[in-house]
Amino acid sequence: MKPLLPLLLFICSNAFAQKLITDKTDEFTGKKVKETSVENLAQPFKMNGFAYKFSFKKVNDDLYFNLRIMSLSNSVFAIKDGEVLMLKTADTVIKLSNIEYVISKKGGAGGGLSSSYSEGVSIYFPLSKESAELIKQKEIIKIRLYTTDGYSEQDVKVVADKRVKESLALVL
Image 1 (spheres, helix red, strand yellow):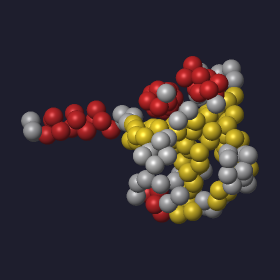
Image 2: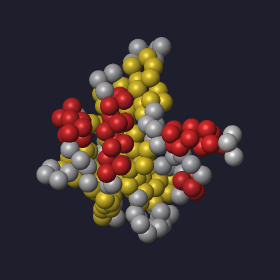
Image 3: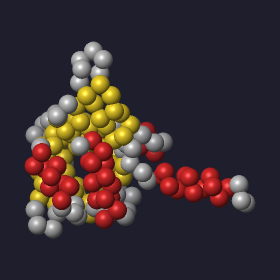
Image 4: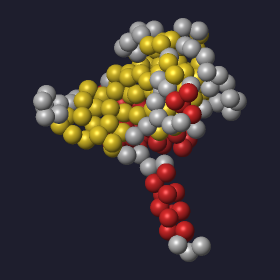
């Protein structure tokens, strides 16, 4: 049993740690790219609706919030160009606009065995300096995303908000 204890401690300590998975300068374009690992943001209690994961990406001075949405009911969905993602705090709503029309596809949310069989998308939302500051300072309590079928919203737990702030700090 003793040999397993250090292994379990190592796995537990690294299981939820945000990481910088890309930190390089492109040798052809000279662009500096930083990107964080994908982390959980919100998931419904029931097995329907959407599960949300996120990461951040920075290319030179341009910052992006990557949202990965997986349909738990495995239904096809789309998100229009210019559609809004809202991050609600106690006293404000941070609005981010989608920059491209996307239609879900099998494995579109990427990563993991379960998501490879589910309908999903990965979307990059440009993040202004003002929005990044609000995310750093305010606690995100809810997320809402508009799709062609209406909207989906989920509560964001305190631990997930903490992950968002830690991940953002890695690329800034």
